[in-house]
Length: 135
Image 1 (cartoon, helix red, strand yellow):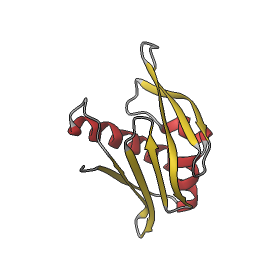
Image 2: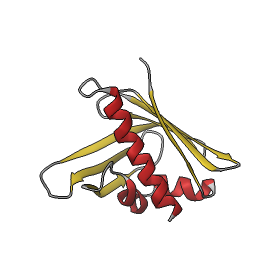
Image 3: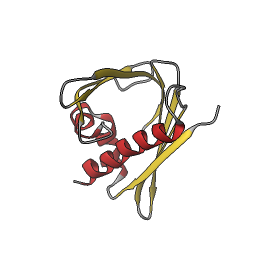
Image 4: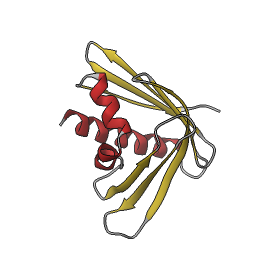
């Protein structure tokens, strides 16, 4: 299966970027794809075998769902791998470059929506992350 890739470069040290990506109080501030959605709560047992649960909700209250997964590999300030609740695999790599901290996230697509739509949604979340981590 081919993975979908999204990425961005954050103008911040890798330690700050890692902290913003992995701590609950930061996750709720960036983990949504558009301005009409939000992440009201985040629970993150950040260890191999631990689970995360992110409540994803429309701001008008009409829809919400639990995005969750189980961590399968964590290398501090380098790599996070997890399996989403539906069995798909995700890998995120963090690296320091001359432009800042680069994040490259790869995920297995689901079968319900076109891959372009999935890539666009996940890219929007990474773009929101960049705005938050740089603010």
